[in-house]
Every structure is written in C-alpha cells, then in structure tokens.
Amino acid sequence: MSITSVLITGANRGLGLEFVRQFLALPKPPVHIFASCRNTDKATELQAIAKKNSNVKVIKLDVKDVESFSSLRQQLELDLGDKGLNLLLNNAGILFRDSLEEVTKETMMENFEVNVVSPLLLTKELLPLLKTAASKSNEKKLSCSRAAVVNITSKMGSLDDNTSGGCYPYRTSKTALNMVSKSLSVDLKPHGILTFVIHPGWVLTDMGGKNALITPETSVGGMIDVIVNAKDDHCGNFFNYDGKKILW
Ligand SMILES: NC(=O)c1ccc[n+]([C@@H]2O[C@H](COP(=O)([O-])OP(=O)(O)OC[C@H]3O[C@@H](n4cnc5c(N)ncnc54)[C@H](OP(=O)(O)O)[C@@H]3O)[C@@H](O)[C@H]2O)c1
Image 1: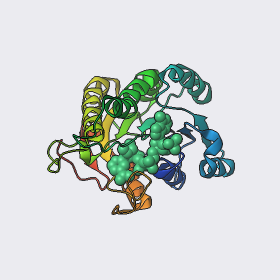
Image 2: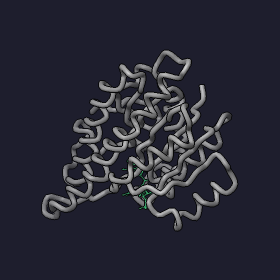
Image 3: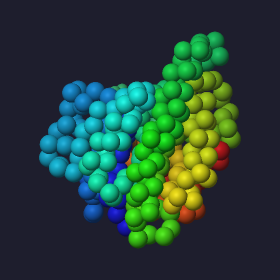
Image 4: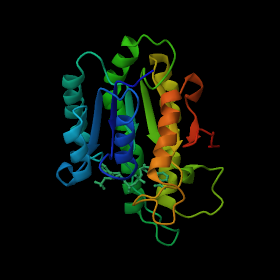
C-alpha cells in the first residue's frame, strides 16, 4: 500500500521537515508531497529538497490564517484533479510551558489557536478532498493510503500521564486536540477516513530542546511506520511513535 498524496503542516523544520525527507525515502514515495510552511522564502532546507524532487511542492500556509484555507483547498484540487487527498498530517505546533503563576489568557488562546483550532478547521476545509480519495480508492478498509487525518499530539496532553502538573497552555491544547481527533475519528469513519493521533517522543528539535531523548530520524521513522501500517483498529486511538498505545 502506498500513499499517493500527503499535506504536511509546519514542514520547514523539525519533525515536519524530517517527514518530508522520510516520505521521499519510502520505496514508493508519494506522487504529491505538499510541504506547507508559513515562511516559504526562509525555508531554505525545504526549498533545496523541493528543487531536487519534483514531487515536493512548497506551499505557503500559516495555520492561524483560517481565511486562507479555502484557496489552499482550491490549489490542491487543481494539482490533484479528481483523485483527492490521501493524508493530512497536522504537524505544526507551538509550545507555551506557562506555570500557574505565569499563565495568561494570551498564551492559552495562542496555544489553542495553533494546536487545536487550526488542525480542526483545516481538516474541515479539506474534507471534500479526503472524501474523494476515500471513495475512489480500491481499498475497502481504513488506511492512510486510502484517506486519513493524522494529528501530531503530545504525551503531555495525556490526562493519565500528567503527574508533574503545570505547562497549562500546551498540555490543555494537546488534550483538546486529542478530543477533536477522537470526534473526527467517529465522524469520518463512515466516509472511509481514518483518524488517529501520534506522540513523536521527546525529540531533539527546537521545541524538544537539547535534553531530548531521540533524534528526529528515529521519531519520524517510527511514526511513518505507524502511518504506513495503520488499519481500522488505529481509528480513534493514541499512539507513541513506536506504535505502542498511550492512555488518554
Ligand atoms: N519535539 C518534541 O519533543 C515533541 C514532543 C511532543 C509533541 N511534539 C509535537 O510535534 C509537532 C512538531 O514539533 P517539532 O518538535 O518539530 O517543533 P518545532 O521544531 O518547534 O517546529 C514547529 C513547526 O511548526 C510550525 N508552526 C508553528 N506555528 C505555525 C503556524 N502558525 N503556521 C504554520 N506553521 C507553524 C513551525 O514553523 P515556523 O518555523 O514558521 O515557526 C515549525 O515548522 C508539534 O505539533 C509538537 O507539539 C513535539
């Protein structure tokens, strides 16, 4: 099974950029890799990859700019024709670690806007393309090569795992993203679209910092393996990058 088309948000650095690299390295890479980022001019590594690989298209997308989502959909429709989009990978995210003493309305709202509202509304906008891909597929079961929404969450959003408290904006935004994803999994399943969330591990990116435990290569390698092999029973579940289930 191979994924024909994928849209990745936040593809200019960190895990998003590594996703682009590792999708390209698959035995059968996607025909369309839409690598979106908010500042295309400064995305030098991504632009260099796109120059060498005609299946990578760099797309300007600030996920906070929900007004731009419909023109993005139209652009994708032009590129994909009547085939639809197989995989939406909501990866872009921000992290505000505010403690109880530090937390403000602004940091809460900002974290929710980027980490919850944007993935939900982008999924809503691109639903017609995902539905088209699902209905045109020869596959009868759920899979990411048929049609899927994969949201990059964090274990910091797990209620079960929270023993250290704090980090109010980020934790709550990822918990909310998990609930959004659970509802999407129920709502989209009848349309043949698979939805689940993955925690990338604690990864050496700008967000993860220098003390993180694993490299982007290891994290994304694991997540791509989960994505490529995902089946019906992945629907509405929460996975670690190595494929193990995480408690909500
Ligand atoms: N690294 C970890 O240890 C870890 C652990 C758990 C979960 N995660 C999750 O994994 C995902 C990727 O994280 P990362 O480690 O790769 O973080 P990162 O290195 O900080 O990269 C974040 C990416 O998100 C993009 N982004 C932020 N706001 C955006 C916006 N408004 N519009 C478009 N793009 C935006 C950034 O673009 P700019 O360059 O334009 O800012 C960048 O491409 C996030 O959802 C994060 O919460 C990471």
